Amino acid sequence: MSVLPARPGRPRTGRLGLILAIVLWAAGAACGGDVPERSYPHRALKRQEFGCGARSYWLFEPAEPTPTTAPVAVFLHGWYAYNPAAYGAWIEHLVRSGQTVIFPRYQADRLTPPADFLANALAAAGDAFDVLETSPVHIRPDRRKFALIGHSAGGNLAAQMAAVAADNGLPIPRAIVAVMPGEVVPSREPSLARIPATTLLLVVAAGDDRIVGDLRAREIFAGATAIPASRKKYVLYRTDLHGGLVADHFAATAASRDLNDGEGYLLGLQFVRARVDAFDHGGFWRMADITIQAGFQGRTLDEATDHGMLFRHLGYWSDGRAVFPPVVGDDLSTIPRVFPGNGLRLFKWSPLELFPTDAGPE
Image (tube, rainbow, N blue to C red; front, side, top):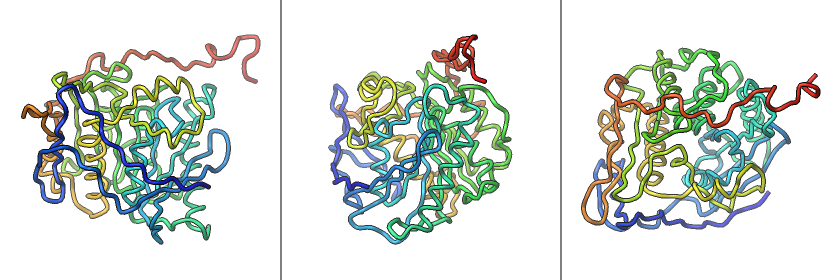
């Protein structure tokens, strides 16, 4: 186990120099000026890895000071992005804000069948709760405050885990944040209609996402039929070339090399693309924070966001122009489509492609 010191980060600025007018979600007001160093209630985090292989996981807990109990968020990475450093800045934000984060690996390597992802993630989360609830050196989990966050394949897993959480001994999730969700291999099980009606659902797509498009995002939003419209929102981010913000599949990654465990594919490329910018501070992180806190407080998303209005503000550029706002709604017919809807499918998973026919798996 190691304790990481606080390392304040400053978002990357665009070519005009971003003045990020962060909307204060407590007051509902926007303010201009340079992005200040964020003040967190915890100065550091501690981390520990448990298990090995596809069912292993990282546990990140707030420190300095160490609370006696904490809410828990499961953070589910994208395909091949099982090095937590690719999302490290977001994880640090969550943990230093006071949440314990479980980061399931769920994928040992490229040979892990996608059909095993859900079972692996559920097993990791279940073991992590057992550790948190029984070990004298870990922070006790507040089972009343449980959330699921995922990007890409992890966004899809977040929705699937929510549907079967109670069946697997996990708490009922109060919030799901599914960012640019995609499927490696399509599956209709479990039924997303099983996601509890009390759960808040935030589904995010990106207008220039050529990897997964918006097909699965729309399926998840429409498939969660038990959740009323007041408790779910669909958000479509759009590119703003005025300041160099590109709403593509990698916009939600936010690297911190402090969390680099040395594993993974194409790490250099992952880290280059995983920049921290206005989409993170003013968008993904803030929207997730608002959704999760509303879920913990028993509020609807309509109540917490003024019917989505709070999600539409990303800030202003230094010349006074507003950052191009996302489209927000609960009626998919009013949300523009992403083309191609199913992405380019640059990577395909097939046992026959991974194993020679004369040396295939038994």
